[in-house]
Image 1 (cartoon, rainbow, N blue to C red):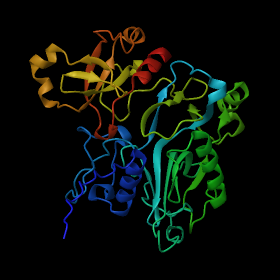
Image 2 (image 1 turned 180 degrees about the vertical axis):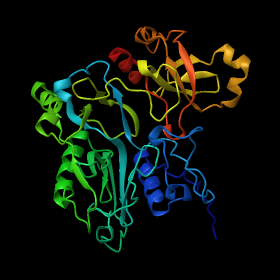
Image 3 (image 1 turned 120 degrees about the horizontal axis):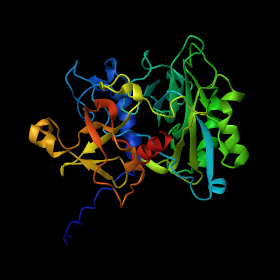
Length: 385
């Protein structure tokens, strides 16, 4: 008998980023860890102490919440200059006021999580009409018993005058059909039509506990921008917090992307000039609205923004190194600073970063902060001031 030598083992195919994100999110919902079942406590998205760490699967019961290392959401850059071919290749939408969230419907329940992975809704998981979001909608067939839906949105908690709701910005997966690789124009149409099809905007105490609305999208021409700019005048119940611009042909990219741009001014947002984080670290001149920035400390001792590639915006001072303050910080820590010289920020670029930005250390950023600020956010806030 002839024995052929065994064929060399083929390397396992790496899942695309979209599939990896979908699988991780589905695993978190079907197999929650102890940290995810705990009450978040005070502090919001920027609360807590300590550096961000990866989500643990087998942490002891009663341990502190451990946030996601990176948010599984597309994060816009700030519009410091209008993009080219704005009217032909871009769309614009009014940005709802509230907390950015990811909506996960799988296993017969629906959850609303922050960018760090915390439950935003006090009641925890709830029933919704989304595929996979309730017991009736989760069992489509014996071949696929767990339908999955992932939405990108903004969560608006209940107030004295309004009920809680979710404003849907985008869709990443609907009923097991991934849309990460679809262009933004199709995703917006798909989200609006599917939400209307299942009646997501109608509250139902039995099957749809939280109403969900698709955010309207307009062409980024003169008329469309005016409609988005003045949208809250047309819909008084809509609390607006700026404008979001989408490139029509862009896919859904997890992380910071220049194909989604954020704009705020005094007319479209009540916090165009971002206030000091509250609750947050104390600072003696909070009344003057100082500009705070969160940067990541690397092994080389420099401080980097959250960009691709990261931009070095400073380094820990020699005074801090001599005093021993730096010893409590490690590579990867997120540190909050006050920017004392905003004019120096406006004069710098990726290839021309000034040596002295006037950064004054405030302390460690919250554990659920997740990531450093982008360079575009720093420039935008300096210009607004």
